[in-house]
Amino acid sequence: MFKYLNSKLLGIYFSEQSRWVHWIPVGLIFGISAYFSLSSEPGIFFYTSLIFLGISTVIHTIKNPHYGLISYIIIGFCVGFCIIGTHIHLNKTKMFEAVQKSKNINGCVESIENHPYKDDNTYRIILSKITIDKIPYATKLRLNISKQLAEDFQIQDQLTIAARIYPIPMPSSLYGYFARRSAFLQGIGGTISIDNLLHHEKTKTRPFTHYRHTLTQKLLSNLVEPYGAIASALVTGDRSYIPHKLRQSFIDAGLAHILAISGLHLTLITGLVFLLLRRFMCLWPIFSMRFPVKKVSACLAVIASTFYMAIANFGIPVQRSFIMISLAMLAVCLDRTAFSMRSLALAAFTVLLFSPESLLSASFQLSFAAVLGLLAFYESAWPTLQEKIFQNSSNFLGIKKILWALFGIFMTTLIASLATTPYSIAFFQRFTAQSILGNLLAIPLVSVLVMPLGLLVYFHCFSVEVILFSGYGKKA
Image (cartoon, rainbow, N blue to C red; front, side):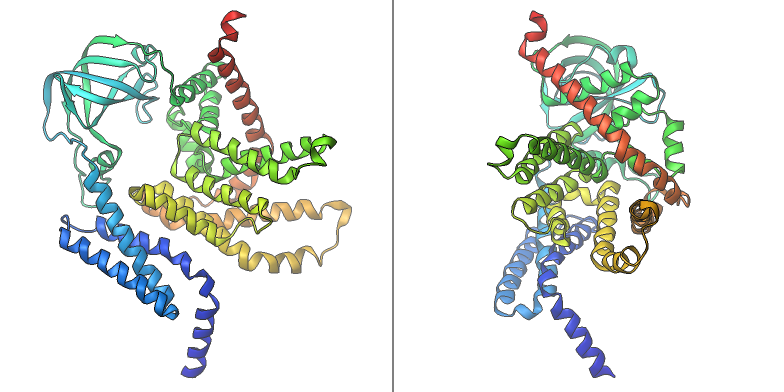
């Protein structure tokens, strides 16, 4: 019996040899988690030992490839631990420990948004390039001001204020939200309470973040409340203007993920651009006869998704989706399989390599858990279901495809909900049982109606900004 099981397990083990490399991101996750579980900073001897262990494991794997799975996990662990340690060591953010009174603070406006947990007349501003009493500090400061005062500010404006600085508190309980650590990883050293605005210098340069803020304000001003807030959440990713009651309603219905720009939104936008460009190019015979329309459309769709990712402020789910979409479009250009588990592993490796601290965020864990569950389901069980149910059923009045599409939405929602439920309970202490029914009704509306119209709004506003920026609008 043991011999039979042993042979079966070995057969499964070696049959998955081509997928062993997928476990490198798992090792990265173990290494980053191990670092944050330590009570003190490890010394240089520990890092040197990990580097030596990683190099030895690589050499051993080359000579003995049969131990590849364990070796990949060990290599990932060493790389992940060293990356997060280096990242924390290079972070020179000044964290204030006590209240600083009567300080003249000069800074540059980095972002402007509505305070998500206070009334609608309170705005939150992040100041960067800080000098306090003419002494530069490697930190950012968070400032809460009134709506009337925030309307006069723009991105990259220079402010000089008289204010008090308050430290960011430690968690009140052992397992509470670690706000101070989160602020440190974002480069924010404290919060300030403004006493007096001494000087306000408007900037003439307009970075890309300015157009994101301008687009958000246009949506808020042109649409009736609260539809403008929802539109800004879907188009620019700024959810801070959504009223608390409406946000809670989305959470209770299990539709909170629709308000956060994620893989769903980026995939819809990229797929829509790809489909429209391909159809339009096919209507141009001179071009379609000379060039591969499908591959040209794939390249242009990646460019469109890059702009949308920049507008969405480079969130972790957006980064993951962009990497996977880029790999899918590259597969289209190379006539290969579009989606696979390897693309997810490469996306996780890339995100953790450049921002290892994102592992602690709910967006990272929920996004990758959902996609991992969906890929595992559609690679294994979906072909069998499609063969037994779809191909062997009768097509009465042509509704078989419609029913199959609804079944696909139902299964996608079910698998994604099951995969993310443990993380949702851990982060938000809640479980929404009606999310499957809510997503079954909402996802088709978002896919067919909401996001295509949002794409038109984005192109319209972007074209207006280009015209004004080029000077033609002023001449007219």
